[in-house]
Image (cartoon, rainbow, N blue to C red; front, side):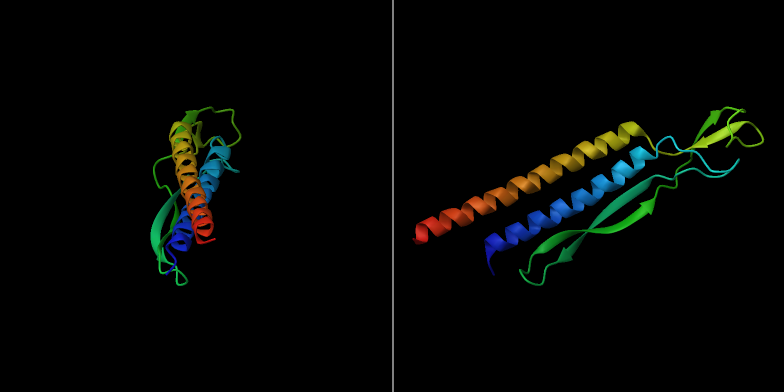
Length: 136
C-alpha cells in the first residue's frame, strides 16, 4: 500500500465532497427568494447534504463520500403581501426556508475544508518529489 497515494486519494475525496457541498449551498442561495408558481403552493425547499465514509479498493483508504442530499423540512417563511401572485387566500406568500446567513457560513466552512484538503494534496505531492530526489 502506497501511503502517499492514500493521502492523495483521501484528499481528493474530501475535495469532491466539499465541491458537492458548495454546489448544494449555491443552489440554496440562488433560490432563497423564489416563490411558488401558483397561489398557496410551496416554494423551493432548502437542501442539506450528509457525508459518509467509503472505501477505496485501490489504496485501501477510508474516503469521504456524499451519503445523501435531503430536503430541509422546516417551516417556510411567511410574508404578508396580498398583491403577490403567489399569495394564498389570507394574503400570505410562502418563501423558501433558506437562511442566507446559515448558507454563507456553510459556504465558508466548505471552502476552508476544500483548501485544507488541497493543502494536504500539495504536501503529498511535495513529499513524493522529495522521495524521488532522495532515491536519485
